[in-house]
Image (spheres, rainbow, N blue to C red):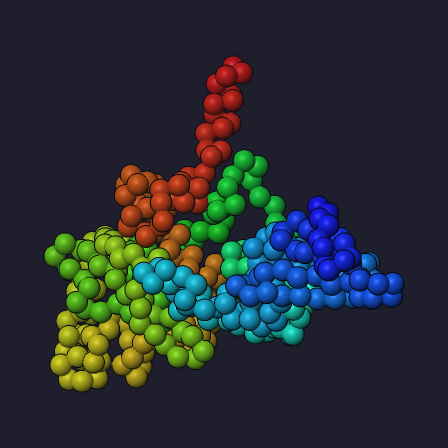
Length: 406
């Protein structure tokens, strides 16, 4: 702060220059008001108070906005949320996926808007975000809200709605609600590592496929295709006869189905990255996968020509359209899981997605495909993910230690 004496007629007046470009004018006479002025957002602003301490309190937030170049801190939290969810915030060629955008909008609508929607951004405290996170009923949902808060704070800092990165330091607290037992992990392994107990063996895949065969041979084929191509559920549900090169046993993965607000959408695969993957002539239990898939493609082509399967889907719903994951799980998988021993009196927690793990481990350890190639076939973002998930960092540790100490 600097002082400067300025002449106003015959009376010298003390003017205080506050850091950040705020000018403070003490009262002209005893009992007068303290005033301050500054430029913000391209216009001159001012405030006043009956006391120096009162003016200082008002200027505290002004100084914070000016120091952080955060001109939007006076706006309500609803404006911050609107900016966070706005497509205009992202590069035109790298928007959020439809699924992610829907999830973030749901989290904001359910947990953040009720807490910070009416607050001015400069009044939002860490405790407010903590209250929003704690409103989530489960640890998993709380973790999702926490990640949403972190991303929202980062966006708010960049756009001048917020000034403190500490606002993102929140963690879900149970508050008397049940929490899952802490999961035991393997020392030295990545959080991505998939334990062998979480991956069905070939015999378990066979058990599920045979249980599905009682309902329909196409459901049996669907299980084998998922287990030995690495297709995710949405990619499998969107699979058409035109994507399968039967002589080469190659599938081009260039689309998927997702469900948003009860509506199914066809869009690019995860990460907007298409890929090609393979499938074996036979499954490990000698199921003739290539032959059965070729037969199904011929029938799908006939269905398409007859108009009962307009898109030429390999695995259509009974109505000839895309399967909804929830419908397939309820009508088909629920019974097959029990019959195959995947549910019931068992500690197993295998799901349909577990079949994707089957593909990756089979490709690595049975077919002996290089990890870099498995990464590309499975559609992982990079080879590090493949290695962390299925090979890990502790493989061979005991053997090396035993050899060293012999």
